[in-house]
Every structure is written in C-alpha cells, then in structure tokens.
Image 1 (spheres, rainbow, N blue to C red):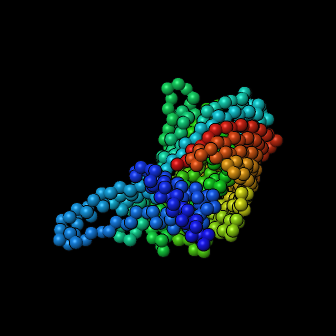
Image 2 (image 1 turned 90 degrees about the horizontal axis):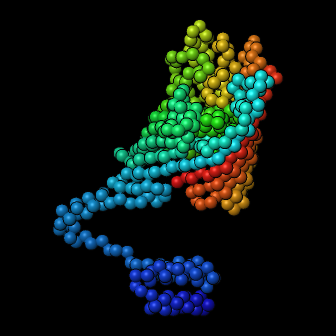
Image 3 (image 1 turned 45 degrees about the vertical axis):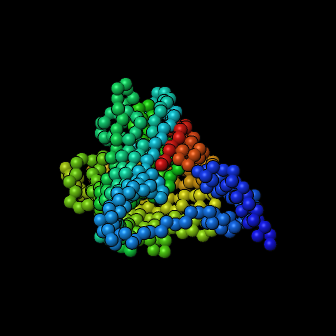
Length: 470
C-alpha cells in the first residue's frame, strides 16, 4: 500500500509539473523531479526506473510497406545510413561508414628549479645524471612527457580488425636539432622553435580469438611496464639539462630502469587468457651509442608476459620481459650479444598502490639501450637496477614517493675511475585532480651519481605544474 501511495504521489507531482511547464521543457523537468524524489528516498530505485520508462517516448515503428514497393527509396535510406556520422561512445571521436576515428592527446608544462652540485674535479662522473654547474637554474619546460596528439583509425574488413595509429609528440621547449632530432639539447634563445617527435606510426591486424600483429614504430616490450607505472611519467623526476631544457626530462630513466624507447618492430600479442597475455617481436637492431657505426646482420628480439587479477578491492599487474641483440664487431672489436631481463609488479588495495621492479643486463648498458654497454676494447659491462614506489589517494589528492638506482659494472680487466658506478634518486610527489582532464602536480627529486672511483655529484630539483589528458 505504501508503494502505491508513493507512485500516486510521484505521478501527481509529474502531472502538476506538466501542467505548469511548457511542452518543450517538460521532459527535462520531469526527469529532474523524479531524480530528486529518488534522492530524497520517496522513490526506490525500481520505482524510479519504472516511472522513467513510462515517460520515455515509444520506439518508432519501422515502415516497410513502401520499401518493397520502392527499391530506390530503400537504397537511398541505406546510403543515408552509411553517410551518417555518430559520436563515439567514449573518448573524442566519430563513427561513419563502419570506420571509427578517434583523437587523444596530452599537454603539460612545469616550472622547474634545479640546484646542481658545484663543478669540480671531484664531481666528474662520466654517465652521471646528477647536474653539476656553477649556479642554480630555472626553466619553464616539459616534464618526462612532451606533448602528444594521437590519431586512431579502425574498422573491420573481411572479419579482421584493422587499425592505424599516428602519435605526434610536440614539445614546448626550443631545441638545437643537434644529435637527437626533435628532443635534442635545448636552445633557449629568441627566434628558436620546438620540434615534433613522430615516435609512433604503426598498423595492427587481428581477431579476438587469434591475437594482434603490429607492424611499425611503437614503444618497446622490454622495460615498457617500468616506465608506464612510474609516477614521474606524469611529472619531471631528474631534470637533465635544466639550463637549456629539451622537450623531455629524465624522470626515473637511468635511476631505476633503462629507457624502453620507441622502436621499429613487428610484434605479435596473444589474446588474454585467464589474466595472462604474451607478446613477442623482432626489432630494428640498435647500434651502441658509445661505440662506432655498426652493420648488424640479425634483428633484435624482445618478449613480455603479463598477468592481471582483481579480487574485491585488491588488484594486481605482474610482468616479466626480456631482450637480446647481437652486435657485429667493427674496427677490430669483437662481436657480442647484449641481453637482459626484468620483473615487476603493481599491487593495489583500495586507495593504496605499490610498485616493485628489478632488471639485470649483460652488454645492455645503462640509462638507454646499449649506452656504455662495453669498454673501448669491446668487452661487455654488466648492469642492474631497481625501484620501489608507493602512492595513496584521498579523494582528489594523491601522495606518492619512490626510490630507485641503476648500477653499471666495469668490464673484466677494465680500469676507469671516473666512469659511472651508480645513478640513484629519491622522488616525492603530490597530485590534485582539478578536473577529469587536468591534474596539478608538485614534485621534489634528489639525484645522486657515483663514479667507479671516489667522485660523486648531487643535485636537487623542485617542479610545479599541470598535465592534461583527453
């Protein structure tokens, strides 16, 4: 009896509102009133849904009698349907003629104040990431990410899901275009320009039951989960050359993991089965940045396996990956194979998340792939590293901290006291979700660099800014 009374009350209220409201505004006003009645406890969820269903307009009835009599009208209607453009159900994009076109992007900017160590003989560390100089520096710059504008085109043809992706990464900082293209060392001078890093261009072909084949340029497999789960990806981390910034900072690259890089590849990714998924690929062979030019006869190989699970408030993402590439000798140096593996996990319980990561390599180098991977005689150097990270979210606020280090070991018989032995850093970060797109970020990073001998360098960086994703 009480339920009938509530429905009668609601119906009367709707009728009174309809009598007092212009016809063009009745639908919105009625929906708002029913929602208020549900929020106040007058209507249950079931009663509210029933009344909403009653007020919904009847579905249009398709008229087919004329279609059979007029095939031209049918063909015209089908053509109009193909020409119709619809908004995608999620994201920013559109659908038309069986094709989905989506746009995504990211823009960030930070004020960064860096305090370097004083430049002396004792602070010389070859390969060190702690800044050294004569005075502090300030910069308005990008963080670890430059900007990003992505375009995805996808459809289904002959039962195959096919897609193409283009990723353009424009930065805000002027650069010199010397050595590393769009992300070359900064050139903070009047009339200079920034660059666009076209680091992603690939196509995919696949079926849900068969998996996906990717051909083109995209992020590597080895070390990719390490950087994608790092809190400095959204901010700055170790600043690099802050006096003349390029379009990217270092984040935790070289102080906990090797940079995975964006590489030409042909990669297969399996369907996900019981939480497990595997990827394997052949990659463009890379030359050593600290050696001479190479012509390598075999490609590089990388693989990765992941496992995801969720139980109530507890969830986890586990991964392991590997890399191997043969380097053919040059100028009398021996050939060698650089290889490595990594393991990692991200575990979350409610608002708390923790990440643990470890890697080890032989002839793999440090900071980036095959940087300082051998000595001058071509003998391999070993390397390893790790990072640990934790975050806690309270409403729109997130607090996080991490520590990591990357170590490089001398080759057998090598003596090199100024060569890097260890880069490490501490990071403290605070984030505030201003809107669903915009996040405000403040961060402190302390970076240490130690040589094989007694040399050391220390630097500190403060960063404040914002990042936007759409």
